[in-house]
View 1 (spheres, rainbow, N blue to C red):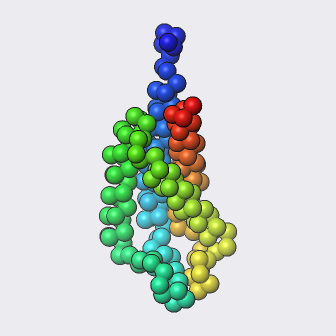
View 2: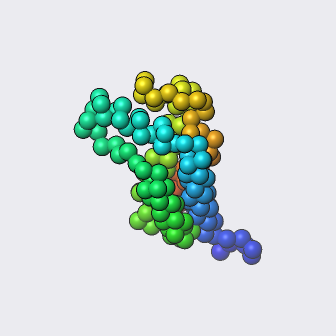
Length: 159
């Protein structure tokens, strides 16, 4: 039994996972705001056109601003709605959460690499930094934190 005033390891572990998930949801909200304010679609849509010119079979959609923003706002709201499940350990959401965290690391890395090279496809250049660049490190850090806490939770459950 833990000492008075201390929580069992499983409770503190699930609290850490919940806080990490909450941080990732917040970081994505900030990232969407960053992209919306810095003209992300003015780079994304021409990039999709350039990629489709080379590989028409690749499923990459172009977006209208209102549809893109509404979809991302709905995603962010869903992430916040799921937060209580992560404070209880995540359950069946652990595997999708891990995949989502990996996707967010790739997302952030794409903005950083785009900033370094100054283009996406050769015909789509932009002034540096790339749209969404400023929030990318926070997005990647939050996603990495989720991955660490998911691993910690798995080890706790299997140990």
